[in-house]
Image (cartoon, rainbow, N blue to C red; front, side, top):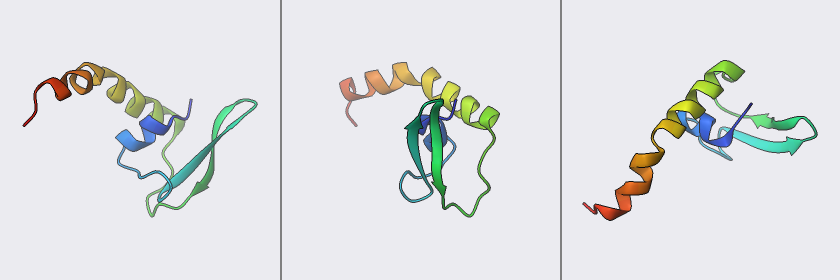
Length: 66
């Protein structure tokens, strides 16, 4: 599935490089404005998996300010 966080994890910026919309069959890319080619569904899913794996760190970070 195409995911917002999966694309961000791959280094793309929302509303600058891409825009997503929800359709009947799930999210889809409305526009792709990056100089880099649009990643494959597999690459986006890998980015989402990396994002999900770091959830614990994101949740704990506020408890340890710099």
